[in-house]
Length: 148
Image 1 (cartoon, helix red, strand yellow):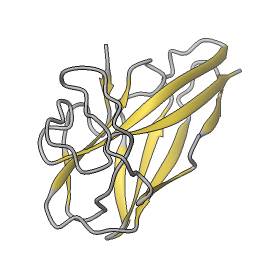
Image 2 (cartoon, helix red, strand yellow; image 1 turned 90 degrees about the vertical axis):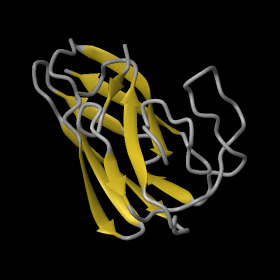
Image 3 (tube, helix red, strand yellow; image 1 turned 120 degrees about the vertical axis):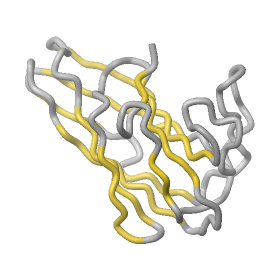
C-alpha cells in the first residue's frame, strides 16, 4: 500500500514553483507519465541517505528549487510505496521558487538497510491520482535509510 505524504492524503496548495519535463515513461493508469525534461527542478540532496536508531523516527529534509514559475495553483504529494517514511511531513516555502519538505523515517523499521524511491508529484488535480501533472512530474528521489 502506498503512503501519501505531505499530511496523509492532505493536498498542499502551492502557488509558485516551476514548469518543465521528465522522461516519458509511465506504468499504468493513475500513475503520472513524466515529460522529457525535468531539469528545471533541482532536488537537494538528489539521493538522501539517512541513519536512524532502531525504534526511533529520524527527520530529514529535501529541498526542491525551481528555475521557472508556474502561474497556476498546484498540489504536491511525496509518495513512499515501501513504508520507509511516515506520513508526518511538513513543507515550507523558502521563497516563491524553493520549498523544503521535512520527512521522518518510520520508527517501526528493524535494524538493517532500506531503500525506497520517493515520488515527488506536482499536479493541477489530486496528486494521489495526478491525471493533470505539472510538466516534468513525477520526480523519483532515491532514499537510503540505515537503521542501527
